[in-house]
Amino acid sequence: MLVLSRKTDQKIVFPNLGITLKLLSVKGNLARIGIEAPNDMPVMRQELVDESATPPTPYVSRELRHDVRNSLNTIRLAVELFQRQMEAGLPDKAQSTFLKLVQQLGNLDRQFGGSATPEAPAAAPAPRSRVLVVDDDVNERELLAGILELSGWDVATAGDGLEAIEYLTSHERPDYVLLDMRMPRCDGPQTVQLIRGNPDLADLTVFAVSGSDRVEVGVEGGTRGIDRWFSKPLNPATLIQEMNRLPA
Image (cartoon, rainbow, N blue to C red; front, side, top):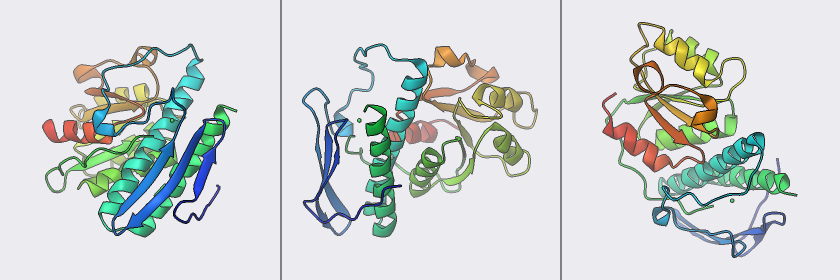
C-alpha cells in the first residue's frame, strides 16, 4: 500500500491513466480536490451524469471488464465515503479513505500500463433498518458498509455466500441483502438458491451488486431470484433511495 502525505497544491499523478489528483484546500468539513484528466475522459459532477446513457466501448475480455468495473466501484465508493466523512466531521477517517482512493487509482493505473464528485447524501432510512453486505473484496465491502452506516443503517458484512448463510441462520434477519455475484466458495447465484430454498429466509429482499453482466451470471429475477440488479460501479445514492422506497 502506498501511503502519501500531501500538502495543499501538491499532486498525485497516475501516468498510465493520464489522471492527476490535486488537494486544493481543506477547510473545516470541506475538502476541495482537483482532477486533471485527458480530454476524451469526461469528469463530471455525479448529479449531472445520465446513468441510462451507456457510450459504446471497445471489446475487452470478460475478466478485464469485470476487474475494471470492480476497481471503478471501489473508487466511486471511496469518493462517496470520503465526502460523507468530511461532512460528518471525521477528518481522520476521511484521510484513511482518501488513501484507499489513491491506492485504487494506482491499481487501475497499473492495469492500463477512471472519478466523479459525489452526489448529495440520500435521505436516511427509518431507525434500525438492517442490511447485510456480501462481497469478497474487502475494500468494496468496507467502503459500502461505511457509506450505509453514515446513512443510518445497521450494517453487517460477509466475505462470501457461506459466511452470508451462516450469518442469516444465526442472527436477526436483515431488511436487505446486498449480494456480489462472483465470489469464491459460494457465489451469488448459489447463495440466492440457498436463501430462496430456506423457508425462514425465502422472502428476504436480495439486491445483486455486481461487476458482471446480468446475462452472463444467469440469475433469475423475482421471488425465485434477486429483487433488483445494481451494476458496478455502484451509485450509492440510487441504491439507498431504492432501499428506502421498497418495503423490506
